[in-house]
Image 1 (cartoon, rainbow, N blue to C red):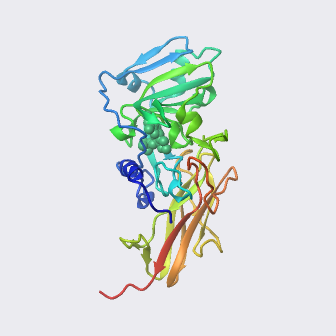
Image 2 (image 1 turned 45 degrees about the horizontal axis):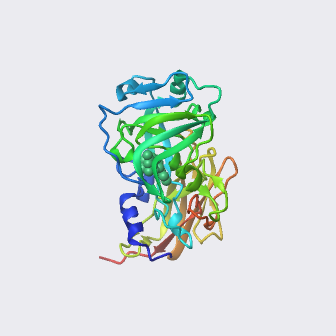
Image 3 (image 1 turned 90 degrees about the vertical axis):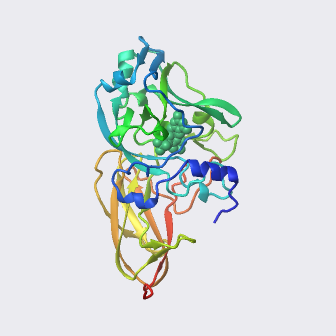
Length: 355
Ligand SMILES: Nc1nc2c(c(=O)[nH]1)N[C@H]1C(S)=C(S)[C@@H](COP(=O)(O)O)O[C@H]1N2
Ligand SMILES: [Mo]
């Protein structure tokens, strides 16, 4: 297992927390258990003076208060978010950034107004190519001082599921999740879900930005143009069974029938199957899979195992409807993104000693 984490990585890891995997038991991640990833600082925003500006290549610029936005048509949808860096800490050599294991995921009930009709009200001009979303947080990364910014193609921003959300799980967004407004792009990795949104600028040329063109790419080295990340590759995770050993995190289980359960998701469509192995991948068993409860929310799976005494390695592996399947082992890339290799969990099955 990779070691020698730096104090800088530890500082990042304590600010940006994951979802404890027992949180997979809940269809909607309870407040405070959803993972958090923030590149810079969490800005403090006064909702009274805050405005959303819509400008650039539009017929009419807009300036909207929070009340203006909340008076628009509202929808609520459960959406599974996952950081593109999930799995990074398992790469060798380890790219130095937020050291996630498997836990950078969560499913919120996001409420807000669809973006498309608002862009149509502003009126995209014929030369509109991309739509740029700017956050209120600022810092330096890759030796570039920047606001957190990401763009979508004009076509992607007009997709009906894209939301300007001001509520998470029925309450105003918590500061760490983007208060007062964030973008929700269902199916896409976390980097697209711009928090503390305050400006939407329609561009007639492709946006160039650090978070767009440098960081969130699958590339082998600095000269490799690589591919920009968009949608989430499939992943299944299990609720860790039994009980943990505090020091080693190994799981202790009793022999006998045991139902393993978890959730699986993909940004490329529904999950088609989740397979489980209890012998480090030698044999696989197809789990029971629940149909999706919503188009962009994770799906529950379960499988019952006759646990026998000894040490075992449990694996689960998702395949989506588009045919994407999780790799058995991590595939390295420069930024440590999109590592959706299968989860491997060490367990020890033994009769519990008498008290
Ligand atoms: N303004 C802003 N938006 C942001 C980020 C950020 O640092 N600043 N981080 C992005 C990344 S990388 C992820 S994974 C998600 C995390 O969203 P969450 O903290 O609500 O889970 O927010 C995205 N939106
Ligand atoms: Mo992320």
